[in-house]
Image (cartoon, rainbow over all chains, first blue to last red; front, top):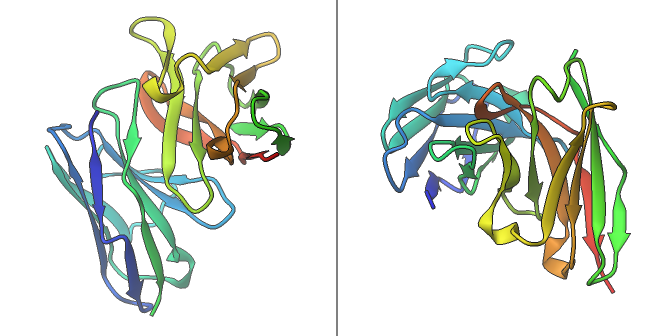
Length: 108
Length: 119
């Protein structure tokens, strides 16, 4: 199974900060990597697909990059509504998928 | 618009089984199937299974093989996930999610169904 190692597991930041989360795959997954945002009590929401493509309707302050085994997710200027938990997800060995353990982002 | 509406919360005893439904609208299950995932309290997301368009069959995560069955009723556009031999570790929120065509990219999710397993 492909393992996804996400870091950090938690992060405190202030409004306006630049926030970066990383995700490392245990093997090459090409660019088959997506990023999700999850707020408490809600289902995850797709933000970035195929490593760097912004999902329709998602603010441009969110971005992703990387390929192979190393990926980054960035919020360019943190907004209050961005407080949430973020997950990476790989689908190289489709149809199965695995997720990183999540990064909990809160207010500093 | 695309919507996935799941059945309500369940409380089950160890050893029992549960069946969660997921009614889709805004598209049909013959166009795109759903996958099932779960999230234990305070934990991350775990894939349980979904349709493999390459082999035209439903594939289950190894962890759940023999205990889970996923079915779809195209006449009502409702998907079902049946999990048997429940244990306390199966306490979780269960999600159905539409995937993007042939690619396992969950882009629309149900609201989740809490299944509590307790004696």
